[in-house]
Length: 316
Image 1: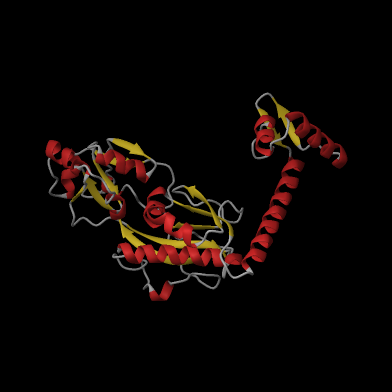
Image 2: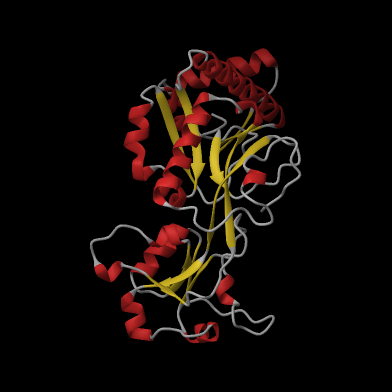
């Protein structure tokens, strides 16, 4: 009920009748002598006391799930559930491209995939492991293992370049249709760097279109809509149509570097599930030659293979 904010949806999720669920809630409220929900025409919301109870029970269920997983892993084989998060582009290359082989290697492992450009809340248990840029971790809650670095570069379709010409300098971008990320806060650094490259200080080019997902920017670039900033790994999508093969624009123009880390809570360090998936990602990176752009900014790969509780390193 607290998650769905609607008795019908909650009853369907639990596979019980609405009346049975309603009776359970009323019984609990009478027993505790408090109101747990505000009831209104749009649904249900937790009261202050309801929120306290929900958060307490949520932590308890998370601890039970963790204990269950620990017991399963005592048999020395990765098994149980694992919630994995990252962006569409990253997991397309590091997991979905070879998912069958991994899943067949670990038949008792059950994955849930959470796709988002923005890191979820690890402390709330939204995911257990993910691939993201370095996350500020004041409470030393996370282990962050360096995986790979990429530089953002500019790409366009053959169709677009035939129609609008090939820019020769950064200043030429003033006269082109530029695809940009939305203005919402983004975890990755400056992804709209091409809007200011070659401009006078304080001048920002007006984008032709803005979108908040890198995957959709790639789709627009392939359609010939304009010039967009992409990671090289996102520009190499398989396609049988030569018109959809992307061409790098201004190859000498260096975009921002993004460092990616394999991130999970400290209490999962040593987990066989975490290790199996991490080893798979590292193997795919090596096989596909994805990590060809050096180590994390400000440090060598060897010096930052694992950022854990004692680390003061911060790459964001």
